[in-house]
Length: 406
Image (tube, rainbow, N blue to C red; front, side, top):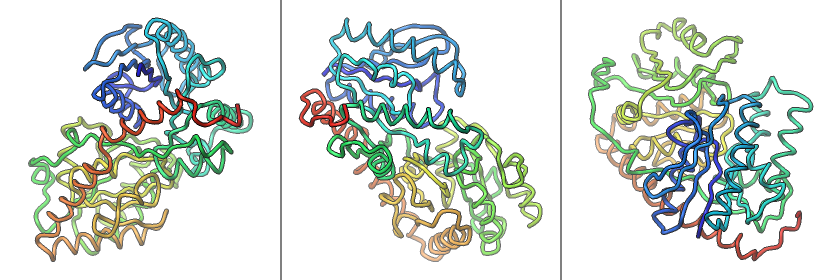
């Protein structure tokens, strides 16, 4: 098949979230299966096209700013024009894009090929957790209506987690026959355990523990819940190091930055020296931090499909997470724990349980590492996802199911 992937986010220019990594992995996987793949994405240094690992990448230049409405509109028009050109020159058979993209909306108005739409985010879910608390009235209704319109216009819809699948069916009211559940992939060659001296640098000895959080410091990620759980964990495991990797978005319970809120809580419990912040780290350093940690915590209030639990498990680490995104499908008591949303006591209790179990059972840490690594290799490989997505493309091209909402 000749395939066009329409994604504003794509490495290395615009790695703003999981969408960039997912589409990069998908493009590579589809190419390895023998398909011709064209990627149209946002560029930061002007328009250009080039070949990358057998994939045709078409960067669209212009005004670049992640959250700007003007930037999104500028990109959408340029991407749409480039897509028309590619369809004509390369006999594109199917176009794949995200449900909430402005470029997707523009193409869906008058598409020349079957359109497959992926659900990577949830405006409704973000609203419920106050991520979009400053957006009101017409803006919210416009975002929701445009996304729902795109989903109805699409020939097929791919939901990348059970949460996304249920939300699409319940909220968007589209034909269930055209919705497919395909799990987010993880590059197990890129994410794996590595030896390092990180623990020594942090002053962590065998009697101490290291708890890792990876993600934006914001309410939706459950940072406030972890903050409440820290003193409880420290009572059972004194001098535990709590490492936070991610940009501070603000919106802490006191209205200020989360870094200040966390440090205030830590100071109240004589834990200030045990808190470490890293707004940005390289991939190599991220691997070292994953590998050095004892437990990775993911207390999010809402996720469509967070990649953090998968990355941590690929590095062999136990994960304590809320039942959001794909976590419930991957994690059980043998691999970590699932805890209720905004339940600091449960988050602390399960983290303590895992730390105690690994301390009392010498071989348990290795057993968990083996189970978690194997789970990622078997269930979440890039090849598996690319193969399943390719089958959805074939269905869209053949038109097996009539779109009742067209």
